[in-house]
Amino acid sequence: GALGVPTGAVAAARAVLEGVERRLDLLVDDSDGVVLGTLRIPPVPMREADDRPGAAAARPWLRTCQSLVRTLVPARSSRGAAPEAGTVARPSRLRVEVDGVTLVDVGQPLEAVSVAPDGSGAADVEVRPASVGAEAAPLRAAGRSVTVSGADFRYRADAAVAGPVRRRTWTVWEGALGLTVPG
Image (tube, rainbow, N blue to C red):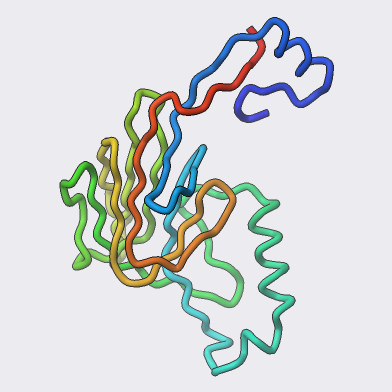
């Protein structure tokens, strides 16, 4: 598998008997949510076709299908990711702080935010400012604590979508998860 853990029964049994422990960093948020891989905050979807009141309630099956597809299809990178059909994305207005230092404030519209443990006790943070014309260079930082705040926003922690929230802080827990993998 993606974490180095064997998926077959025989290989998994060998790993348990002869394997070595691999320690992984985790991101843990202020509501005790755990992120093993990458955390992403996409742009805010803005419906074109269905902006009339009650339109979403008329088709609850559509939301279920979209959720299933998001779960089954691997997440694309934030660069060049297309919005869902029937939506256009508008930039988010969020404040992103790394170890208490502001990386970007609500005055700067954002295309996406990505946070992932780097394996050394810190998180790599990438913020993509919204741009007109040429693509803006991403802002990068590393730290043990990342706080995002602003208008209601949703985020994708691994494959699960959470929110909306107005503020969330993620802290790196160094070596918090131990997996036995083939030696």
